[in-house]
Image 1 (cartoon, one colour):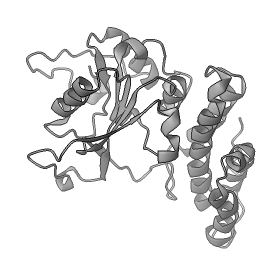
Image 2 (cartoon, helix red, strand yellow; image 1 turned 60 degrees about the vertical axis):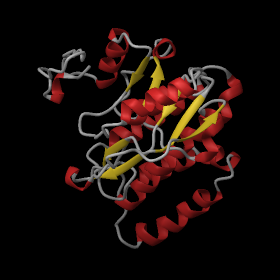
Image 3 (cartoon, helix red, strand yellow; image 1 turned 90 degrees about the vertical axis):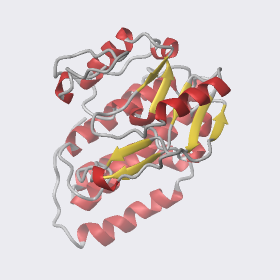
Image 4 (cartoon, helix red, strand yellow; image 1 turned 135 degrees about the vertical axis):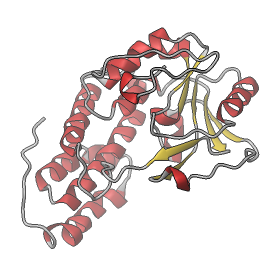
Length: 274
């Protein structure tokens, strides 16, 4: 299934069904596609990313070997030029890690994105992408489904070529959507505070994931000289980071502020509000 904006509405391959959707809210379209799907598992991928020819066969093998799997993430390689991506003609030996849930695997610092996600359809239908979010809808979805049992991480072979954009929000360079990112961070935190993500027994794991996002976005804001955003995110997530014992960030934030912040930029406040 593809969004109309992908420019491949006329994609014709035997056995592949396409669905053209209006160019509107990406999360609303994701929800519509999940409901329209028919397979036992759903594989997400972005139109500008690359999949090796053995991707689906490898995922099928993993699911056959672990039929109880509900959530599966793949490994990736970053690229900016598709010509530089080289997948082997034959896949490397299959290596997977099994976890009781995605939440329980948080200490592994796996990269979590729907660009690398395969989820069992009957479970995906229990959740929804929040169409109120401008960005970070992926994290919002994982916060809902992270407690699903039988999570698998495919370590080898690499099954995704992920296009790296220069405006990546976690990077020091100015991203075109960094203000939306700050608003989305605060929106997700408020949903957690109000208990909208589910059982309180998973609070510690969800807040660990949310604080990790706050860390990346706040450091990026520091590098851009946006002190208001950076300190707002830092203090909003301060106690969560302390409880997670993220001392490198709690203390390193001030080092980055002094080193690449006030010494390189004049004071500037963007005025982002919750």
